[in-house]
Length: 173
Image 1 (cartoon, rainbow, N blue to C red):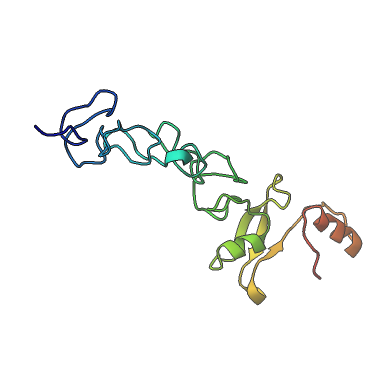
Image 2 (image 1 turned 90 degrees about the vertical axis):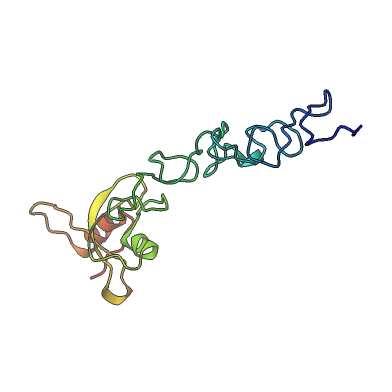
């Protein structure tokens, strides 16, 4: 006679949930003779794509059903701590690859110090986006140039500075 134990292939009623007599931790029966389930921190092959244990359902991790990933930066939907999420790494479109808004040319430059001079979409207030020319190379880079078509209206320096202020920018002459 041999005493019953976990791993002997026989499920002991009231003691074990299962007993498959193997050392495979990723199947339906865990090595401690408990049935595998979403939330146990062990990815069950062919059943779960992820399992973060008690953190299932948290941003950037595994969904609560362990069948998909939870919301994350790059999924194309703005959620969690994201300012934007367009599911791409194009720094010229107003949303950076870390899901932060490209508020100014300097923000873009700080995100990617290899960014080239050119037109970029920026939204200083995080809402109203417009295209600005970004000088990314002169004197350290990150300068925003905004051309505002005012028709034939001439602006003095005070008016021009007020116009720049609307977009959270400073006027340099």
